[in-house]
Image (cartoon, rainbow, N blue to C red; front, side, top):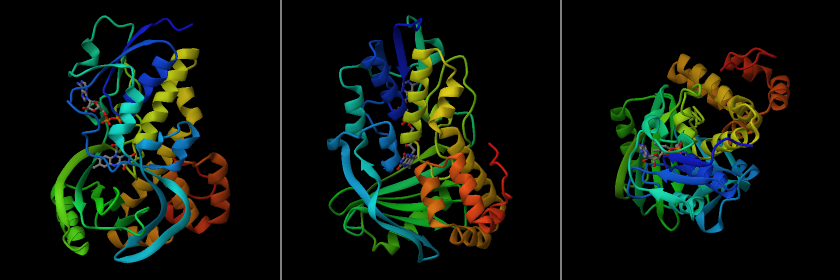
Length: 342
Ligand SMILES: Cc1cc2nc3c(=O)[nH]c(=O)nc-3n(C[C@H](O)[C@H](O)[C@H](O)COP(=O)(O)OP(=O)(O)OC[C@H]3O[C@@H](n4cnc5c(N)ncnc54)[C@H](O)[C@@H]3O)c2cc1C
């Protein structure tokens, strides 16, 4: 049986809120600390792939839109697209967090997890501020007067001038989020955002927000256990952190309640392998000039692209893909049968 009863979770993002829900439902006494006055203030595109459903049912009223199509552009041309099935969701993150925290004590103040006393267990879920690895930057504008497809598809613009991409995500009606993120300075991202807004016909901008994203992969656990972005549970290339953060919380919950090692539980979720794969691709993209990056992306089989971005890469998938697309793996710098290194 676990040797703890009172738990403090510091940070009410997806990782902290999901861990709190799991622990509270299992009968533990949980208190959550959140420094900001509202939930989901942190800039985020609110997109999550359908693979979240393998462990969590997104509440209906927290779904802004089911994503049923995507288009990826390289230098103004559509290079990859997919239609006609569910690729993921745009969630209302505030509603999602409210659901997760229902009935759980939420204290609106900032605390240092290492100094918090009076609890049997303290968990650090403070997001990127607590992450010690490499961080990418992202900027996004919430705009009115733009519609994408039938309002249920997303648009991605592969960037070759820097390692990153831009996005247009629907928010319902004619509101969308237009963002750009990657390994570039904010000045570069700002210029790119403005050129994208020009292409979209200079829509009315409600606000522009920016932030950092952990992109260096998982870091070792410290004396205070970490989940979510604090642990580096973010897909390094796509910057997706909602589902990975929640998966890391599931792993910590299982480890705490069964006594099994956290690293083992985390590995079982498939998250570390998927992070290692994205890190390997990220490294390759960094090593190439802009033209080489665009070419590499153009030559990527859509099946690989979809699997890598949905976070559902398995060792079996890698083996099959290497046998089927050896030339692409050679371009990636991963010879057949080589394991992507973390
Ligand atoms: C512009 C942008 C767009 C993004 N788009 C997407 C996307 O579309 N899909 C996706 O999956 N991911 C996206 N991400 C990444 C995603 O937002 C994060 O990875 C994810 O929210 C991390 O969840 P978390 O719970 O670990 O941390 P966070 O969501 O960052 O939550 C941490 C919480 O801790 C609080 N906190 C910090 N310090 C303290 C303290 N001392 N005391 C108390 N509370 C504290 C913070 O206020 C915050 O609420 C995006 C990121 C950016 C910057």
